[in-house]
Length: 94
Image (cartoon, rainbow, N blue to C red):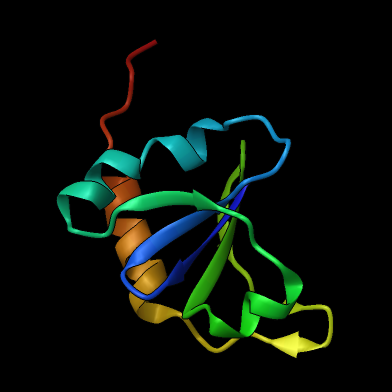
């Protein structure tokens, strides 16, 4: 799963994928922080309009720094917001 910030929303790509817990957990805290998640088609030619992008999987998440030949700008505000939202999610006791 991957996501990105464009304007004031977090965009999750509309694509065949499994909804992973790493991407799903912070969605409620992001909404509460007025950074609503949406699903949309993400095209390579639109990547330059994003203020930041991340990749998520079962091992965690990481900022995207390059897509093909396009360097992504540092996305400190977006990654800080995502990190804060992710950290606010309660853990399940096993």
